[in-house]
Length: 137
Length: 123
Image 1 (tube, chains in turn brown, purple):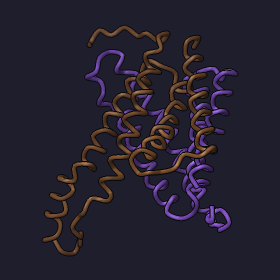
Image 2 (cartoon, helix red, strand yellow):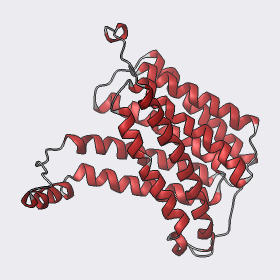
Image 3 (cartoon, chains in turn purple, orange):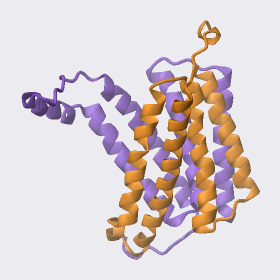
């Protein structure tokens, strides 16, 4: 772990950012579930409501999982940026849009249409071009 | 389909807030990379000012974003996020001397077009 030699020519950072997009999409879905989770009212002028609210926040497992996934996403992104080019890696994050849209069809009964299908194909194509470009970077 | 005939106005303030969030986020990415550099020497260097500033910018960018998407059409506002990708490519050139090549520019254009399509389909 400690003696990792820099390997900027490998495509490892690209795969790491691909992993990031999966984490980010899962985090967004979990936060959506967390947002609909029943929560007690918070009245900051009434201290008696603060503790139950914090307890409810901590036991709002979808929300907690969403934040944990976001933290994992950030860590993976930082490790990827350490070894790869920012200009190649950053736009790959757009793949998150693709996962969220595909998962929403399955989980929230969203509908697929021609625009979405074309958009998803375009984003995947763009990311593939960046992945290819990272070889010669 | 019925919704397509109803015009939902997207206030300029919302557009500007989302663009502001994207620009802050792009600087967040720059500082994450600046902060990641000391980690070449080992993972224990993860706690450094630049990295923390990068994380702060990243989290901070969600404030104008949430304020922005509160009003207006998401199909207009979400694609504004891609302005952050364009900025990041410019900052990469300025701060890290990364070349802007044809494949990178082409890929960026394809991705931006794709994001716009997805959001048009999401109306």
